[in-house]
Length: 120
Image (cartoon, rainbow, N blue to C red):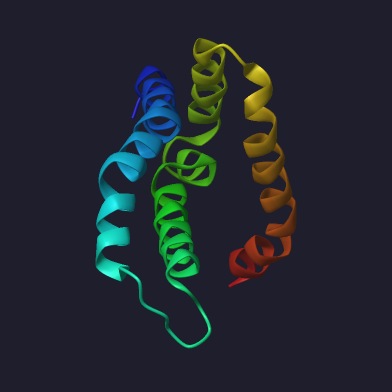
């Protein structure tokens, strides 16, 4: 991929994650999960807790597919710059601080793992 494509992919993935995911979850997924669970209790979890747990799992799935780590893995640093640009387009660059800090911590924590695999 060339740099412009990676940058645009970072922008698009971030916009989808920030705008599309909340719309999808609130409009389609949350009502379907609420109807599916109904007024049941599983072990000690009530229906509200079950709905929140399922929605959390769905959110984690979207984070793995469209989050900052996925942008870095697929598009590199140029994609992360696109992510910051997307937050600028949305009007608040400070919202990019948490994803950038998470990426930095993940990069630092995985240095020993990458070194171990590079030796083999």
